[in-house]
Image 1 (cartoon, rainbow, N blue to C red):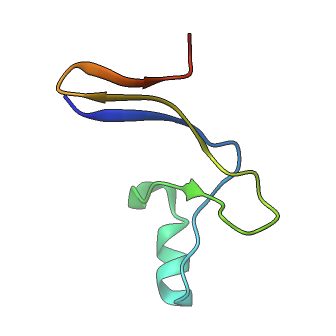
Image 2 (image 1 turned 90 degrees about the horizontal axis):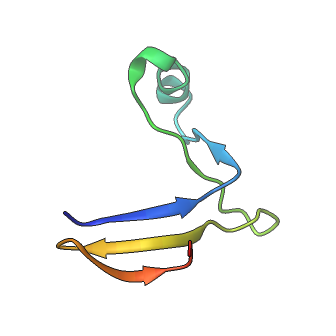
Length: 61
């Protein structure tokens, strides 16, 4: 499996189209929140990256 574990403290659902925004804020829509990436926001930090079961990056331990 390939995956990364991120520490993202500030998550938002943001879309430019108001019709989509109304739909996507509905929890039943299944739209996942994404990290806030504005200049004043804390950037997400990658804690671990795994590729084919091998740990490539590990900041957890």
